[in-house]
Image (tube, rainbow, N blue to C red; front, top):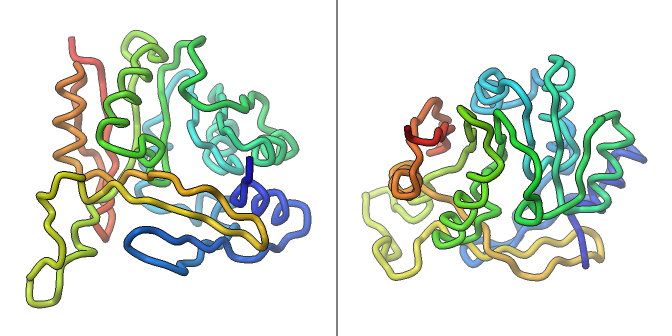
Length: 236
């Protein structure tokens, strides 16, 4: 399977430099992602990320861990962290960086273990792909939660992308397919991914979905462009 992001992470870690990852979607094209973003320290992270890390407790599973910047920070705080990513190259880098527990797997293939905190950052809802996928994801995460455990995840309301300066909207936000269900394709050098769905979900929709599935949902931090951090707990 082609893995442009994993290859970029691998190259950056081993050489200190890498070409930009090019991201195309059904709304945009040619956006650049610097692989260095996956190697940030705590002082370079956003306020949402720092808040999420400060709220982590107990045994933590970091889903979609990438190069492990969040897992490393938590490990340095003496928390037990399991870093999960389905990219073999990213997992190799995380092990080389000293992360003690790394699982190379799709989160849906993990059924063992009970965690006090499930952490999903850098648009953690993205792996759900669609709103239907979000329900499937949350149902699955239920079985990984320890009693009293929490899910910390971030996302963005991207409706602002479709709003003109005069307040008019250039797409129908109430259309059948939710506007946050983006179709992505990534390219790094000569490595191109297949097209895949990536979900950005507004907080109200996230909470409606979570509550329907037996969670409580609290918005605990906000960013500058519609980003937010939410905490989900199993309702008693």
